[in-house]
Image (cartoon, rainbow, N blue to C red; front, side, top):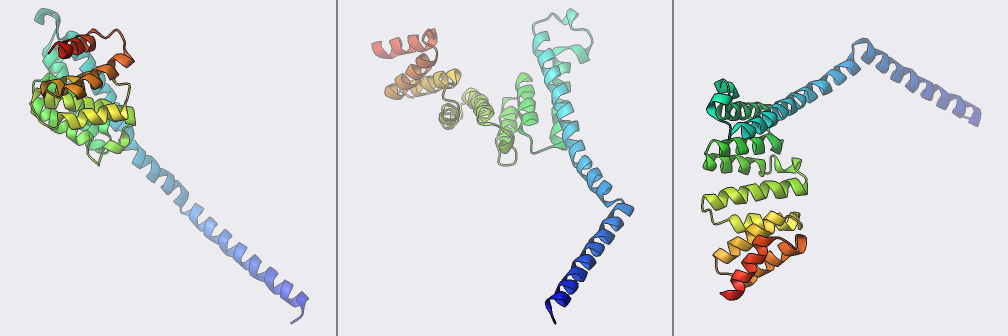
Length: 225
């Protein structure tokens, strides 16, 4: 077989492959496969979009609830517009968001805040644990994770849970300029009579905010003890 015949054979093979691929593409378009793929992608996005919508609505309701907390009962209108009614509605929106997208930490955090406002601190702590679980924590940026850990530390502190310091240590590691994190860490160390660690935490807070009176007062207190 000379070179001319080889070239002709190669040309025929390439042509047959091109025709075969063209037939496959034609078949796919005739049966709407690309559209099905697009629809499938849209279907996956739809629950996420709905989840975000419920979360935003819940956050707005919670904000309204906080604003109405100190209003007289006569000014709050119907039960749905009252503090308790708004918090309950925010809680329901958070649950709807979680059901649609359980891998998003945000609605768990919203639910935890709502439960805390209702006075259910243990349930609030359990819910924020879900936000920080391997299932959902990946949806948080470092500073957001730090804020969530700080909130969990506050709940643990109120419930006298010993693992507070672990969360606070993570808070200042993730967010070195988290002023509240350093202050709470200083208070925890001070309560445990760990004076050197407490002084370090309060000094870190003063480096962030030199005029922070609570940290300066704590250092003065430790110096005189």
